[in-house]
Length: 113
Length: 114
Image 1 (cartoon, chains in turn red, green):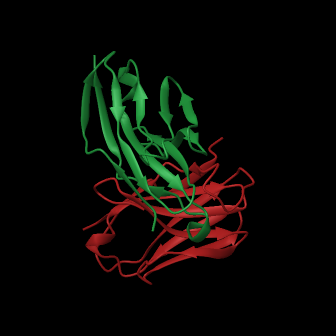
Image 2: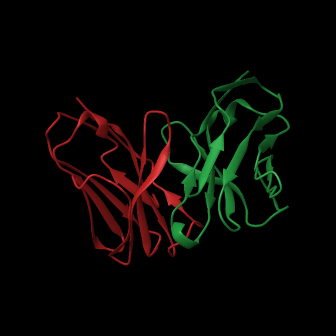
């Protein structure tokens, strides 16, 4: 049983398209996160939801919109994709809002061409 | 704000060599410190952690000691194996204004040859 699962694993798309990445966790955690890993492996938080409420919203272009239909799911929708959006996007969850007890998904590699 | 700096990689070692990956941090207050490992094609996994000064985190032969005086949390292993090849991330959690956010270093790629 995968604890935090992301789909798709790979996504190749053209500039200007709109795409979504989905994340689901079966750990019963209350908090979920999106992190972006750039080509130099640098990881930075984008968003976090706690019980479907947005609690962290870093300086991210408003083309990125997270949505949490329930506390087990956190999706990331990206409009008007740009070349610079190419990265690996990681979903993670934790029991409470904290830096402890994170479980990460295996990532979605997005390539914009 | 909080920040983490790791030694530049990549690091290439022979099996059974000694490993050190340096990590220093900047934070207000008393953060908790972590090492995460990312194996090829996988997500990050917690390797070890330390929550206060002079704590030593250890797991799978890896160790790191929280040194407040030098603001460091260097990762060490006495004898690496090929299976240790991965990307290693130092991270901190400082609470306060960084509520819920892990701050990561830039990652160090380790390759171990037989």
